Image 1 (cartoon, rainbow, N blue to C red):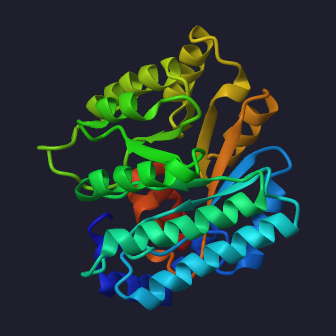
Image 2: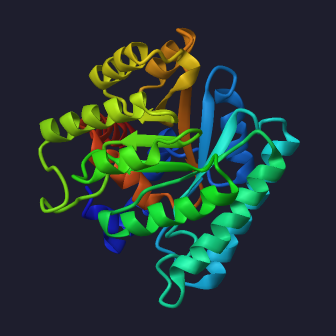
Length: 303
């Protein structure tokens, strides 16, 4: 599935076929109106982070357009009274980091524009998504730069990478926000754990570091066992439910999301939108067998 997510031929096949209607489970439409409506529904009992889909931008105009879309979205959240419950997540590759000339500088400048819009909206925040391992150092360097002016900027770390426990120790200072996920990229064994059990053990080690730190741990997993471990470690560390977040993807285990929120836990839903949904959608299928099974059943029923 991860290989297919990079195939233009597979993309054309999926976009033309009945799969496009199945995407609605995982992607909240293509427009700002679509995603704001979804966020408003979710924000009744949970929190939200919105991702404007797009990555690996190949020209400056596209990077500028994505940054402008985030700025407009944040203005809309402010106008609609949602800024205190909805934040945004950004990928630096969408903001031009991969451009051949001054990519890091361009991405940093555009990310600053997004953060400034979030600060103006008041009450909301920005989290910088992590991508494949070749960009980890660049991403964390840009996060550090952004935090100089916007200390609430969130960082993302991936438990599958061997370096992540050490990264957690450096990131979890007072006021920091760190999202811990397993990781959705096909990484080599030289830098990443390949077995699921090893990734899970790494996840727990990183959890211990974050829960013992001074920041806000944001635990991104759908695994019930890891959620229970997170709750146990939070309690042992003396954290109230407001002192950490459980984060899940839009369309994945929605009942569990609402049940956890009903228990008084802080639950945030990652809600993507936009026309560039293909790569995101294919990675979601590749992450969990249950997602792929849902996809196949939907195609059969629609066929």
